[in-house]
Length: 192
Image (cartoon, rainbow, N blue to C red; front, side):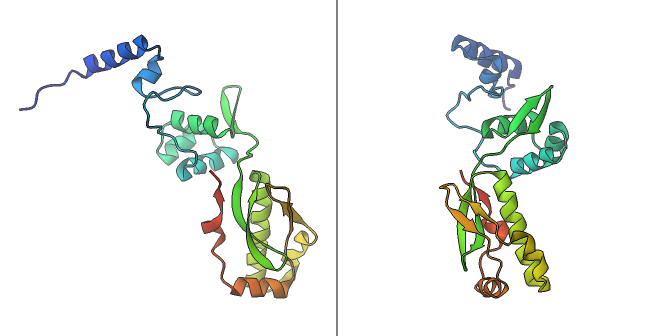
């Protein structure tokens, strides 16, 4: 028969040892607050987490942090910590909202008669490229060149400041699409 564990005693010892080391109660428990470091060598948070990125998207669209965390099956403090660590979350009047997202993203683009991967400096630029690539997909599916007209003469600057004009020539787009690049969803990613 296994001996009975004293969970309450173990918890009190953990908190007391943490206090002796100068740690806060939450750090000693293994659940540090926002802005506090983990005590263990293993950092539970990663710089990019696709599940928590879904939470960023939902809060950006107007959902609350608690409702989003519940839907994703994660603790609200874990999602709040991710917002803080990635720098995308802003706390205003006791609520989290998504501020300016300046994390670089790598994504494909058609420019100058070729397919290239570029790194854009933030969310707004990634949205523009995503809309352009969506318009290209719509053009390839419908053969309607009018869907490309908003992107004629436009382009995007990458992280190094180099300008990449959007490819809007129908024949070039047909040729590039037949070359078979990876789907946009598989290439788009936040650069860690």
